[in-house]
Amino acid sequence: MTSSFRSRQYWLPRPLFSLFLALLWLAMVNDFSVAHALMGLALGVAIPFMTHAFWPEEAKIKRPLPLLRYLLVLLADILRSNLVVAMRILRPARHLRPGFFVYPLTLDDEFAITILASTISLTPGTVSLHYDAEANTLLVHALHLEDEEEAIATIRERYEQPLEEIFR
Image 1 (cartoon, rainbow, N blue to C red):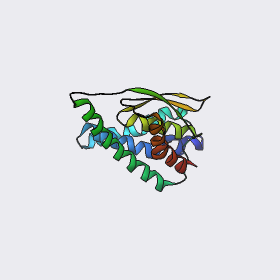
Image 2: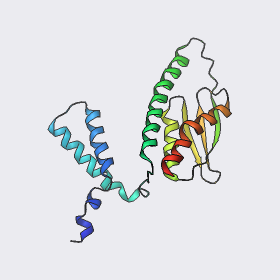
Image 3: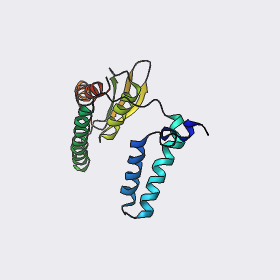
């Protein structure tokens, strides 16, 4: 047996992700038992082990404190956007102005771009549709788009600039 076969890195390539998957399993089944905990741990080990060859190199988070701020801003924006989207949809006269816009990226780290695209899609009312690597842009759809420049400025200020700080 080779030493790499016995190493923790071989069997547990992404330990934090494994823990996340185990906890996610417990949250999804909404019942804590030894069987569910073991199943969560098994999934937490098996999924990263079977897929680690397809993953890009591990993200290099340089500054964890801005990451915490980013997550708090994202959580607040998701909650606020849920309320705004619900009010817009439930009104008798919706007056929605859906639209597409191209978001010019300043990020160059692929992992950070993926996080930004996911953040845009997680926030209700917006969806990131396409990443153009040559132009370094994202195509975004908004449920209600009043001012394209304001939407771009909001994404840059609330999400992209903090991601630059986290991953630089």
